[in-house]
Image 1 (cartoon, one colour):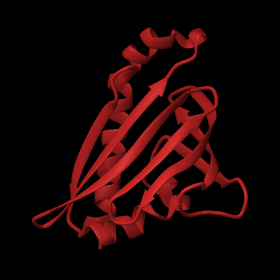
Image 2 (image 1 turned 180 degrees about the vertical axis):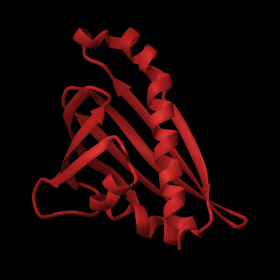
Image 3 (image 1 turned 60 degrees about the horizontal axis):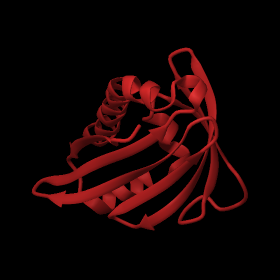
Image 4 (image 1 turned 90 degrees about the vertical axis):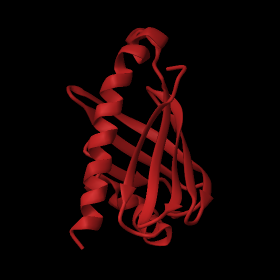
Length: 146
């Protein structure tokens, strides 16, 4: 996937509250419908260098994604690299705005050749976008239910 998928949502909370929510990596399965389970590799569960195995489901496809946090700027940005069947990089960026925070999710995933490589990734972009927009609606519900 040469172009990243970028999705955003406006959350009714300041960046520090949003960060508090998304910094709890183990809770991502509660709002990411495609993430079935997160197991940390080692003791570290926060910050740059945190490694985790994420059991992921996209329709009938199931895979375990090995992820490592590469950037951790509290209240601003978190980035990861993906290793495994699918590789890539992703980031959450928090931007303060009147009445809350703009949460932007940017993801670039590369498909292996046997899933069509760049062509398979191109066809999957709309599906990824749909799933991640749904995840962001679920994240927003966590703030509106408070």
